[in-house]
Image (cartoon, rainbow, N blue to C red; front, side):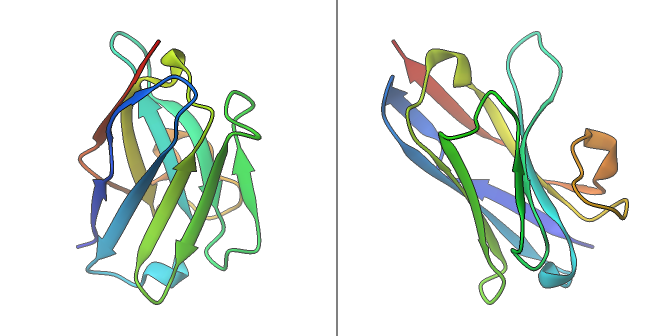
Length: 125
């Protein structure tokens, strides 16, 4: 059973930066595409970005393009989300996801089989 654990969330002022991590265990991390999603209170889970299993490509939502960057270290079974230029509207619980449906890029929640528990990111104005 694949397990994903996010870390690195917190409170940051607008314009600041945070780096989230997603540590994977229980599977072959390098074989799967990975993604980041977020969910704000009262809203649906929203695609943030995804990274190809071989790191040959990334794909981002328009709302974060140019501000967020996804990377992965397959030797450490870890994926990262570097966030800069944070805005109050980026406030949400951030989830990492992996595995699931084939194909690239995968931007829908149901494309993914495994999910972390989420980490809170709060951006103050």
